Image 1 (tube, rainbow, N blue to C red):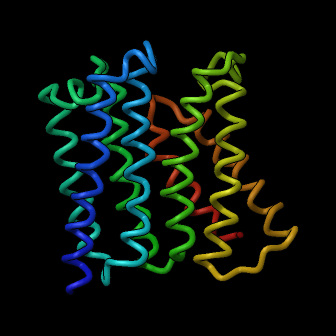
Image 2 (tube, rainbow, N blue to C red):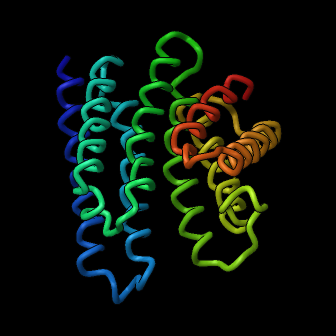
Length: 227
């Protein structure tokens, strides 16, 4: 129980830190990031809070309190988005895009529940959370910074962004399987990680209505059963 209380405290500190950091970027980062400042601020939160996985893995003692914390974060984000406060913090008017910050914790709740009922392990949770956080976050930044064609007319994802997603996800899968899952580093693992990464990028590219913040983590978690 003491670990759960500490985990909740650390979770709130983590979230508040990265929200505060993104707000600072919005207010004083225009000279450095220009028009991409709001996107950078969003991805600071997106990437930063994905490190919550390490609190979940090494601090929390049960699954119920992480879910409670994520539920609170989900409701808070939803309320802030409805009232427009989230748009102010993120420095943009698109409430539709900000719903991604609501979908992400929901997907993590689902992933934890799936793990709790024996459909995956801690390494799979790490892959789901961190691949989405770092992979999608960096893919978005690279996709906007590097000029490249879209994958197709059905998606806004670019070749540069998708390649970044593949590379980052592949690294995450290997690290999680080796350091959390206790799997030996082999050529077979690298090949499997590459397949998972390509699958994740395809799910991201083909998910409609901007729901990739939910579909990608769940898809990665489920496919990790075969890695």
